Image 1 (cartoon, helix red, strand yellow):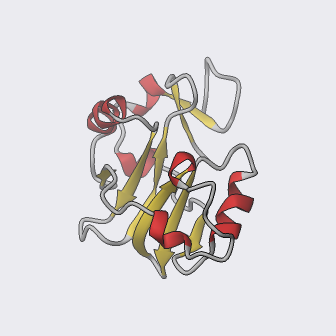
Image 2 (tube, helix red, strand yellow; image 1 turned 45 degrees about the vertical axis):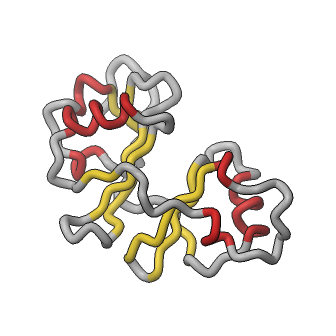
Length: 138
């Protein structure tokens, strides 16, 4: 699948551009129930690969928590949903990857939440690797 980047977990940007977001996204990103506590978010962020926490109720997207959004003074027992943002940049699976790249390049974080056309159902996560030269795939 990958030519220039030797990882089977990466899809080079130029190979992804003619595809749709649905063909490139991580279709089953790690998610957490929206009733989790701050303690669980901290534990998840202890893993270096965990950059964003996606909160869902069933398949309904409730918000995302970036590493820097979690107040270091928040008690472990506090509801984490209070630190989640619902107004994050999103795309649908039908969005052309080239359009999604434009959105990614305007964002601080190299990730986009992928929602169904209904604007509520989480379908996946689209993310660049650290160099923005390829997409993370599973």
